[in-house]
Length: 288
Length: 303
Image (cartoon, rainbow over all chains, first blue to last red; front, side, top):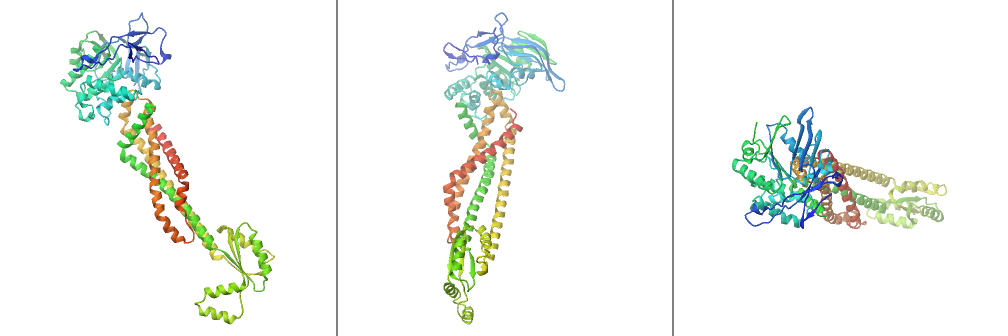
């Protein structure tokens, strides 16, 4: 494992097995992230300066890189074909496309729910194309994932749901006890820490899911249709929250087919059609 | 250490949140162990019954009136030399007559018949007690020794032999039935465990998926199921301990009254061997539960 401690703060770089670190990889430093701006109270929650690995000092730094990636499901259902892209640290990228164009497959490749049939998926310098099963938990502790259906543990309270992500990683009790309220404060759910998911609205449940994704201080958050089950008001809240998290340096991959969201974001838009990238625009718009 | 504590906490959480299913599984394991313990108790009682019979059952060897005391004493000495013989009592003719009179003092017909015969119709009698009921056949064969075979008028054992045989046969059948019953309970418990893991995995497949998504390792997901197997075994064993001792304490005086001269020692048996018996039962039932939990997880829990 490779990890760093900078500025006297416990860091969570995208840790990867030493065997996977290439010789030409150099740490890249990102800016500090202060969630105190989000909270009304002065909670100084620092996700902090962290280090990631890039392929080379001479290449543009990237957080995510897909090299000629194809994914074929049996029998001969092509979800993605020859996808090449790179996403820089701190980018907010919307991945759009009609149903069945491979958006979710793209998201699943990023958190190793699926493996590419061909090509390479590289996250922070870690080629996860052929990642071993035993290494998947390590990857997932460093990528926050948010889903349309929230995927909360129904028999755990809000704070237990958020804490669980730390518990599985073996975090100390004191650390969890301190961190969870801070994260709940960020998503403005501190008052509902002891409620069960069924006692929350859809928007609140999605905020719990975001809090859980945040609690690991991830470098990347993959949000797969996070507003699909929400009304306009809650959709607006969630997107604002993701934007705020992105402003503090976290790379956001937003998979969506919501035209309004994509157009209002004015961020990079990657359009998929039949498993291929048909458009990749900075400050793009929804074009289908 | 922290992870282990969390796994233990999740195990109890899992047990509690699936309470009824857990209760049924523990109940079946409890019934299995209870049957095993009833069998053990039955073994102790069987031994007690055999001891009672052996205390009471003996071979009476009636010598002819013409047989000399020396011949009888030789025969007694010979029998005492056999390892199967526990005790040999020599009853002289006068004493035999006296015992007969006492035994039949209310039966005037028999007493008048005795008067009619005149004199003492009894010869020497040897009362032979064996080490165990199984030894009687050997002792009877030994009495065919040529040195005193012709001196013996009669031997009295046939009724006891069939009684012992029947008793042994009955106890054997009871034991077989008990083993079959234990096997049935164990089979039901195993089926419940396998089904429970299957149902639990099915019910919690989404939860397990979420655990994986937030970075839980396979061990972290599987370990509570494995620990739960031990928890079932432990609770079933504790349940049996709690039930067995009061039951035995209540029944023992009843058995002792029934057997009269022989103490059944049932309570003492469980007190003296309790640690071993319940320890082995806990390890055994937990091991079986664990094996089938692993089997069910391998089949249904793909993490």
